Length: 227
Image 1 (cartoon, rainbow, N blue to C red):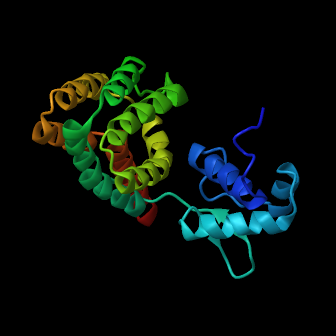
Image 2 (cartoon, helix red, strand yellow):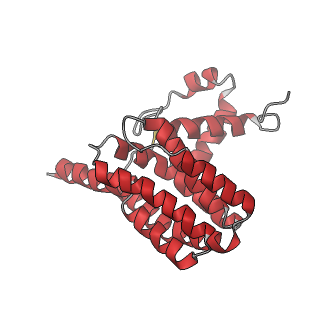
Image 3 (tube, helix red, strand yellow):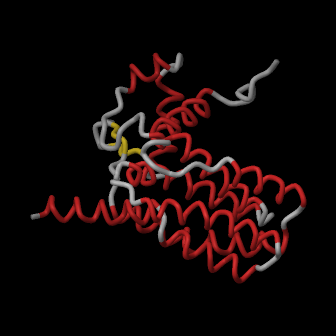
C-alpha cells in the first residue's frame, strides 16, 4: 500500500517533519538546529533540508543568521497576541458561516468531535489538545470557505506552541469546565442555524482560551526579564 508520502519531494518531507517537531515543542523554542545531524536522521542530503529551512524561516518558525546558523524561533507575547487577534476575527466568522452552510456530514463530524473532548489540562496534555483541535477544525470546515479554512489551519498550527505553554500554567477548574460546556453550546447553535449567536459565543470562547492565558504569562515573564 502506498503511503501518504508517495508524491512528496525530500524537501517537502523535511519541511513537514521539522514543522511538526517545532509546533509540538520537541524542537524547543530558541534551540539551535544541528543541520547535518538532522539531515542524517531524516536520511537525506543537506540540500532538501536547507530548502525546508528556507520555507520555515519565511513562515517565522526558524531564524537564520548570516553564518547560516539556524535556531527555532523564540516564543513571545507579540506573536501570541497577533495570532490571537486574527483568530478573534476569523474563528467567529467561520462559526457564523458554518451555522448557515453546515451539511449533515458536518453535523455528524462536529458531534463526534465534541463527544471526544477531554479537559484541556496538564493531566490530559497532548491527547486533550489534539481532541480540542479536531473539534475546532470540524467547526471551521463546516464554513465551506476554502480560503478561511487554510488561514485557520495555519493560525491554529502556529498557536499550538502557545497553547502548550498555557497547559503548563496552574489550571483553574472553572474555566476548563466552562470551556467544555461552551463547545457543546457552539455545536447546538450551529446545528440550529443561529449564526450571530454562534459567532458571539465563539468570540467569547477565544477571549477566555488557553492562548489568552499564555499571552498574560509571556508578558509577565518578559516584564520580569526587563527589570
